[in-house]
Image 1 (cartoon, rainbow, N blue to C red):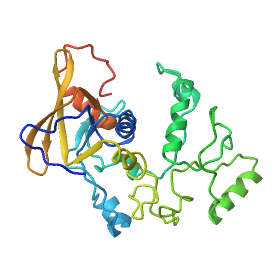
Image 2 (image 1 turned 90 degrees about the horizontal axis):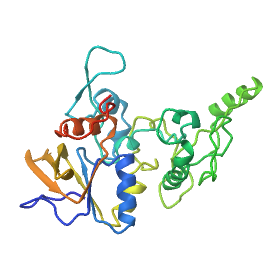
Image 3 (image 1 turned 30 degrees about the horizontal axis):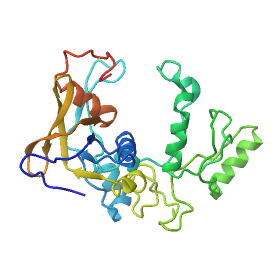
Image 4 (image 1 turned 90 degrees about the vertical axis):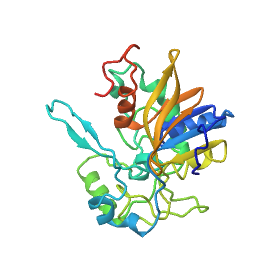
Length: 291
């Protein structure tokens, strides 16, 4: 839902969440379930869900959903900075990914301050939220899990079956990719196995992206989503973040929105950008911010 600002901004919210992607949506959903009133800020808009969303030229060449605010990014050992833009839409990159829902492996956490086993229950929660189809341990490299996927594996297409059989003959271990796509819930549109899944919004809403799962449920439980809001920085007061300074892209007006809790969940590019613009130098800075 889109709201107008009013004289002094939105009020009465327990928390503001910046970003409607995976991190922001999960936070907002859990807070709403705990009885909190949550305001989500999204710089993009809702996906159109029309014929253009399956038009490769519109999506991949003309980049219909690409945002107008690119960032200068320095990657790895590159000495130069490059402009990088992202698709901007409610639901974040979940709207454009192909539904593949693999877990990180246990050794992926070797240099992290947390372990895979600490996160394992939350992997299960997210698989249930996204209603993932899969088959536990068919992947020989899959990490340990406490429960199976909420939905069984999907049938192989004829091309996939040929690849599967060829892999078996070579003594390989093919497995079905776990997918967050609707193949079984007749209340919603069932996937028709088109060729425009990965990289495209689903025109018929058969992909279990966040707008069809967590956000749809959250909006019935005390979450408001405001689109077209570009967050500039967070505002600190007394050692805590007290508000968010942002711009309404439609009116070009500056807004300052306040809540007791502010969660920065703008993704790998936007979250560091917001933090680095926020003038928080007097606080301990982790040297990985923005890297």
